[in-house]
Length: 143
Ligand SMILES: [Zn+2]
Ligand SMILES: [Zn+2]
Ligand SMILES: [Zn+2]
Image (cartoon, protein in one colour):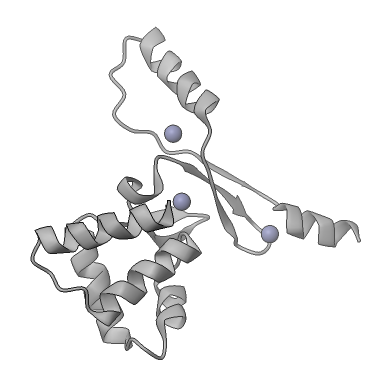
């Protein structure tokens, strides 16, 4: 799965005649391993190998070629790989620790499709975010 994702990333750069430079590789890997990250988290995770300006530049370029996108989750602007890499999913957002968890759920998607169909609606997109307290924070509070 991870190898396939990397292959796709490399092919995508090649297709655009972009070199796989260390900043590009490290920014991609940080997002691949870390899920949605704020810009400052991304900068922290790629330091000291990549300087701040290179992170901004790489993010802008990757956004242009749809390798990543910006979204608002838990009231914060975060950066995440596009669904071409992650697959369609939604987020659980913890109000205590700020952790964002990716969730894929087929029955949910089917229910939304049925909802649209019922209303004769040609649905293109939907945004769902569940906020609350994650398992780790709930366990900590109970202890
Ligand atoms: Zn939490
Ligand atoms: Zn996500
Ligand atoms: Zn969905």
